[in-house]
Image (cartoon, rainbow, N blue to C red; front, side, top):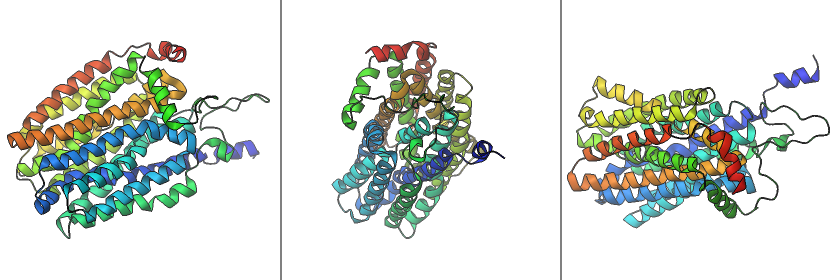
Length: 437
């Protein structure tokens, strides 16, 4: 067997990087499950209102989003490995320090500032950066798998967080989240390489250039770009803001964030508790959402490689809206079959929007795609923050979440219409527009 044939059979380093990235996303996802589970115990111990705790979650979500485009630029400047390891340490520190809080402003600092910065640097833009840097083909599938890492983190942590929050208490649950984030750091430092060039290979699926001709991967930054991460991120935003497709993606993804992290992720368990359902039971339902999210997101990545991503987005948003419309009718003290159906459908649709959105960013903005996706993801988290705070205020004002669910259902229909009207020829025409800007 020739050396060439042997190299073809050997596992490409890109898949090792993707595996470590998946574990990092699992470790970083621990806190994503925490607010909904810990909100009631914190209220019971300290007497804080739903609005105060929702504000802490909102700060986290805002930073989670606004950090993302700068994190993408930092990964280009300092390397994926350094930024990822630092982010995991911030998440671990913020979660561990939460056990010391006794005043409301302190929860804003730990849940909001520290964990917000850490999770923002490990946001879904991380998945897009890995896929764009290491893969020349199957990018949609890879983004789907990595995005499912967040769902896997929710699946792994949520039942344990719920059990620990009840006995022995929420502090032990916070320490579990910290341990999960910090446990991945050694793997990141050892195995998460910054680029294919670091190990002397081409991105997976890329054909070697002809002898004597150099052809850098399209995912790599163009020469002459600013080495300052903040300047780079803002320059990309300026270019992208002149393209209509960018604003369509921003609007749709803001609604996506509002209807996932903002509402269901933060308020489903408290809302179920209002209807008499045990917190551990509600947490178990969210864990089932996590299971089917893995299936749905990977399937969405596969579909994105084969079908028009704008049509996929429109379908995903509309199905989500239908689910939210009927949710108030399904909540009760016990789990009915109709609730199981809702959980399965919502799980399949949870972040299925990520692969087609990232694909549109890549096709429209080329090498800027990862940073543009970071800005689009920032809108996702701003929408989530607004929904988390707004739903908390609605609950305090009316004693229930019903109006929040109905409003979210209407927003999903808006997102479906916006996504369906993204120009079919965006990929063919708008890169030139961006380049000329």
